[in-house]
Image (cartoon, rainbow, N blue to C red; front, side):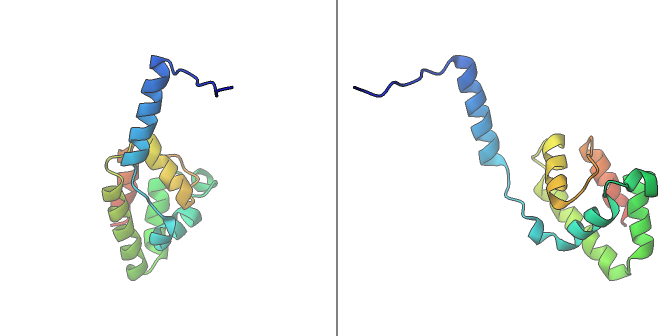
Amino acid sequence: MGRAFRLLRPYQLSRLLEAKMRADHRPEINPADYLALTNFLRGYLDQDVVAVHGSPIRAAQQFRKDADEREAAIVHAELERLIEETKALSDTEISDVLENFGSSWRFATRREFEDVRDALK
């Protein structure tokens, strides 16, 4: 007896193709390549970011005050590199990457993410 094959419907094919294309175009982003940024996200954009700092931008400004110049420059450089590396990703995908890095804050837009970078200057 032969094996039965399932015939895919057109709407299933389009979803399959879309998922395949996304997987092929999504860059491999490893948190281990961004250690300083990961530490910043875990330490300042944790679940208490609103209660402690009021917003992610204020958290970044507080980090700027707390960190020495070298540490702040490294986090800023890593954030710049990550922004460049994720320019093809959607806002949701960027937020997923940051969550994977340890951020508890869900960024609604790329601009919010870039505002945090600007606050680190």
